[in-house]
Length: 198
Image (cartoon, rainbow, N blue to C red; front, side, top):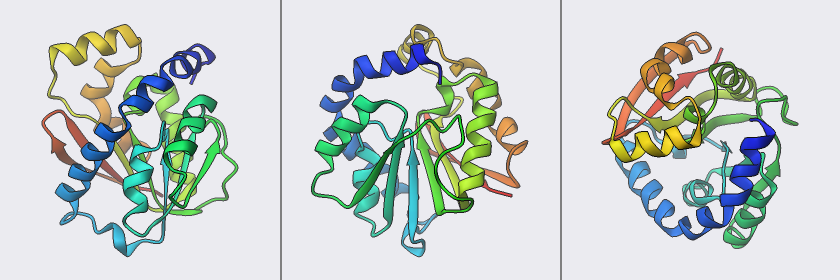
């Protein structure tokens, strides 16, 4: 992620902090919806890539998984540390677009929520490769599906990411980087792209 984008997320980190409880409720609802598709309790550990203020880490820690959250933005990590102070979650500041400090196949599962749509295609390829490298079993991208909404279109256009290309090509792009890709729609405008690493 470019320095400019890190600055943007550094600036809006406190806003994400205010949305923490809403995000926790949202992720709790999503995990409930997918529990028949994916039994997270069968696994030992998970990494949340682009964990932001830690809402998904919070919910994942309730499943019994050992959770590691990573984010490139220090201010996000700082807020996550406060929000997760009573949870056993390891938080690491690292940029997943570069090689992370984790050994190959360190985690059973990796998840990234609403990160890849904001990256350019060449950056998405990097994140796909790095998450595949550090994951043994399954990489999950929780992100937009093809069901668009005007308010999301406007917000994503203002953010300047690659949302419009992503939603048209997500599964195809991921299939170039993973053995298998399965898509489960988890909400009206969101899907889990479930990828099997090589």
